[in-house]
Image (tube, rainbow, N blue to C red; front, top):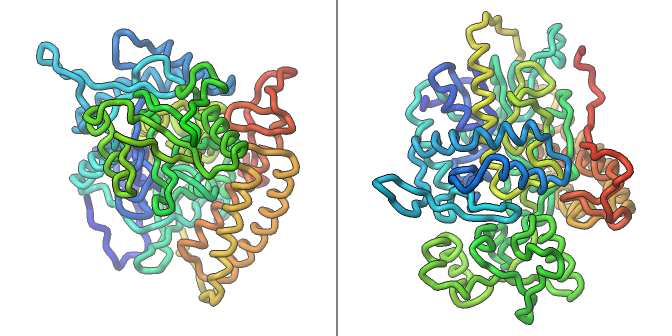
Length: 544
């Protein structure tokens, strides 16, 4: 991995990847022999969502499973809003991507060796009809991120810029260059406290989701929807932002912050219980604890409100202690830190925002509405997830679309290219802020009203209240942004406000309950018309 010179303020690469998680690093490795690459990462390798993914990656890896079964399960979970072509494309490319990771050395958990051949242990999670989730114990994301990062460091033509955050995309339209291509990004170097210019022939958004828009989330602090907001401001369409997945089971403890309890716990027999020890999921769905996440999250939310309690419980203590410690070592150790022995007692849990199912609209190559701008991973709307993402399809999507985008980019790299003249960031008309409290106050207000009004259960009145508040915040933030030097917190707040507005606008348009969007005013699916995705188009002229 090339060391990035600290004195430079402008950079040129053939490929600029914004995001250092599974999607971004997979793409970098697939392009490593073809281009000079810059990877922009907010922090070190353990700061992104990939690192904290516990469950695994879903793929058809056994003879008793099939593509058709995986496709059917995904379509069912997506509540008739999945794009079947995208679903089939993703699932049929699954096994080869798992093999690619295994060849890189990702330490997937083995089940047994038969005739000298390794067989991987597969778990079954909510919505899946078969065991098809390959994993590395209960820390799959950590194993995957670490392996990808270690490989990236061996390439001199890949520069990783840690502690950098993208501010905005640079397009020909914005600069009046007579074309509408994306040609780079302005990026804040957090260590040097300066904005640097990154120019590239191809720009890829791989910056993850936006669950930090909610007060309670399983995601790390960097999940602020940066790629979605930047693409929207540049002129890209977004879709289905109303579908925010709330993971049913995050550890409830005042010091735990956002520790996720993987779906695999329920897949291996974990039971959800009320404070009196009574099971309740069978009253909500015949699949019980293995129902899709939206159903489980709403059931927990309902029972908490009905009983007026702060949490419910997840119990796997009826399994042997040896089984629990071997299958869930990370969760076992983390819970022990908080005085909870999961081999002997149930774990207190609450739902929390977990995954953004909508995002920037892309095709099967990862291409957005803007030429030379791609998006992959949780930043995107590919059509795979529909109204609800099925467990462990997310890392699969990262891998498959990184592979697809790489092929498309490689096919264009030999074309002649003329570099545009880009001016560096201009801070001559702004000053340092002496009111940082404005940023922190707006950050807290935004996340709280999104949780209260645009959370697991919604109503028209709640959405109207949220819309009036986000409009005021957008105006305040825009004025603040125009007058003061930017900071990491201001960039993230600006992006979160844009994403919150997109979520609210999409939610207001959907006059039904479908998948992850549940409203008390329209509690049933609208059967009077064919199911439709919610597509928003920015009011910006792309010259098309």
